[in-house]
Length: 403
Image (cartoon, rainbow, N blue to C red):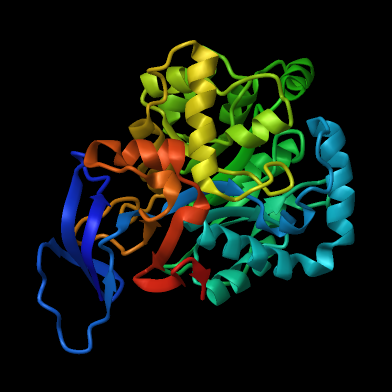
């Protein structure tokens, strides 16, 4: 396949180059050539990209796709009241989980996401839907005692039996400190270390969570997880709003990645803001996620980038904070680093062809110039501007329609 005459290519390479009017050749799911006027091979498909921005597919580093049917169910409620109602309704709709996950994956694809980190129970439904839709999946079975009890000594029996593939990566998702027992967290850390699995966990989302843990254990959330052996370079800490500088030093020391979900945090009114500047100053890897449609209410990562940039400029009283390039990095390269996949998140020879295109004919992307492309992606674009989506070199969205 050739993406012909790409008007702009946002490479996300080390130099963050933006190329103009070049062709991209894709063979067996891999980008093999990027240059002008590639000669078409016999039977090679050609897609005209002369009015397209071509960029890496976005990486949604935290969501719960099985909750897609709960969009709009319990809006305008605080987190703990919201959670009680959501858990009850989720149980009632549990038999429709596979349908809801597939709906979420189709929405993600339509709006330019090529990789999702999904945290849900049962985790098997995400595997089935990923195979059906073609989206790249990092699957974290969620263990939350409000749903059911778990024996910490039988983690191996609780995980999906499907082997990891190039398209599906398996991890473990203890829901949170308050939603999972101390014993289970300790066993999770041990099992993940032994089997080289990633851990995905909600941390320090609310002030109440922090205060209750201090009262019960005499430790702050990140300190507590470190004490149990949960922290490490294959651990993804989601939310991380109510944390101290000392905890951030511990995150940096242990090599964890953080996942920022600004729209969900703002909608549920946790009262705090993830300390993005302090994290970046320490060199902590911060990816972006939407959380679920029950708390967002969208899986559109363009909306998430836009909100992220504006939130931190406002919060720090500094318009130079969270510039467009940094936020785009969070939705691509930082997500790739968080899920330990060095073959996605950028466009260059040898990388996996997880690519999306934006339609420059759309009014909200005009006028466009090379020095405005990244700004347009973060501040002007939305998922409805996405025209084509390729995952592993396969076209899954064509001319704004999910195939």
